[in-house]
Amino acid sequence: MGKRRRERGWVTLAWLLNLSGLVGIAIVLVAYWVLQPVLAAAHGEPAQPGANLTATSTPFSGLYYLPTVTRNPRSTEIVVQTPTPFVLANGQRGTVIGYSVSARPIEVYTFGQGEKHRMIVAGIHGGYEWNTIALADELITYIAENPQVIPSDVTLYILRNLNPDGDARDHGYDGRVNDHGVDLNRNFPTNWAAEWNRDGCWDYRPTTAGTAPASEPETRALVAFLQSHKIEALISYHSAALGIFPGGEPWDQDSVRFAEAIHEVAPYPFPPIDLGCKFSGTLADYAVSRGAVAVDMELANHKDTDFKINLKVLDVLLKFEP
Image (tube, rainbow, N blue to C red; front, side, top):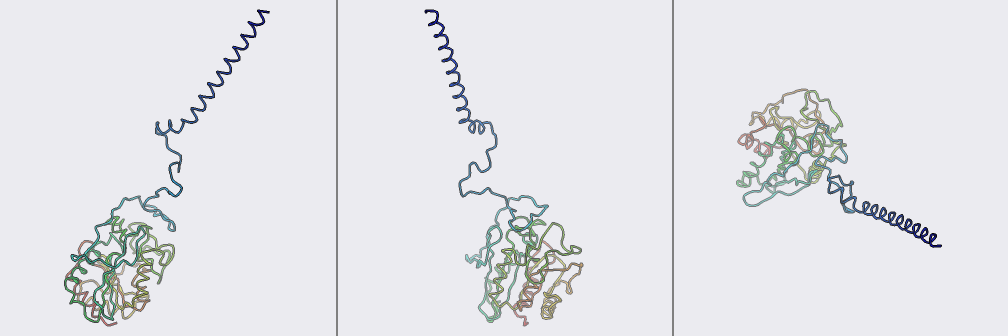
């Protein structure tokens, strides 16, 4: 009888030990499961994608996230800074007519109140042609200080920088396109082409004409402005060296007269130097389609503004009769 009690005691003790062991294992497993994310973070393991995002957060995708345009195959992610805004000494700012891909303002300065509307557009190729923006700023400053140069029957509009993203990115080859990789002077609706023969054309970096005519916000801002204003004469400034290109395909004859009048006061070649490039979707062609005389005009190089020369060109613009 005593022997049986001792045997039952050993069996009970064995079961208690087995049970306590199972409980211990369970505790270890639960602790490991609870502490695993903390241990992973402590050892530098990457968190799961989206683990720390709120319900409305989205991961930053970089400067060249292109929702509608194929990424420029040779582009790199570039951190850019917005240039110091241009402001006249009296604090005057231009009128914002739209925004770039990266939400930089596109400004137009207005001088005079006459019924004849004239326009200058600069910076269509951003930082690659930054001296056109510098020239526009010099002209804006000069006219603000000398308002009498604007005839009483003229209103002059100066769009100083159509491609502020390209200007912010680089003052070189990489500054030519907008933040979708689009050459804005191939994106206007008139004579637009998705692709073109690159022989004789600018081809230092990959570019596109956009996904469709006026696909870009910069282009749409200027198109809307031209549709709401009766511009009679327009100069689109470029650089460098090739000369004066009348708008129209074939060249509009009134725009040819305009180019000839400019050539009389400026040393820019006309007829322009022909490298064999067939231009499509240009601002000058679109302006002509809207009833304006228009030229693409290239400064002498990529660093000078030719300011004194272009004061004479300004006079031609203000007085030319289409």
